[in-house]
Length: 253
Image (cartoon, rainbow, N blue to C red; front, side, top):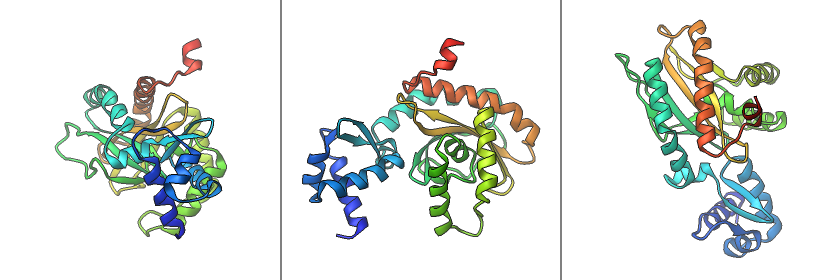
């Protein structure tokens, strides 16, 4: 088997009923040796397609469940629904919730704004990480080496309309995002559209995705985006809490 066939074999084994699964069982079910399965699992864990549950046991991750249309991802989206609607109600703008899927993110929920226009986004659509508010919020929570890996792979499949930024400039922006708690997409992903986003974490503290507010650039200038940032960050914190995350800094404040 080539590398793609091997990865698909492990993903099929991982998505079998009765998980989490032992490494040995995944190797037997996929027909691969344990070292090969372990290497593939590490890549899947980094992309949120798998999650390690401890002591050599693995389960399907949120990204895999999102693509399959079920599981924990749907549960988190359902639990977040009232928060997303409240954020839309308080701002009037379109609200999105997405989870990371490897080097991209996938929209799981969308609440259309009350403006006289609709955003082109849709549930199930994939978005890039380096040029979207949700994507940059996710990247801001990752180790620098992992961000560099995402950029390198993105360059390989890059399209002209989404130029990959200089790594040093992006890292500086990600540092600023981490400090203030929200990110901004200033017409980087789509002309005439601006967004502000914040990261969502799961019970383990890992960043799994994010939420955002989006609107036409003529109705959302940068000053307004920065004013909305804390609202989005607070909403993302609520979604994280419902996903089981406990922010010790907030809890002890």
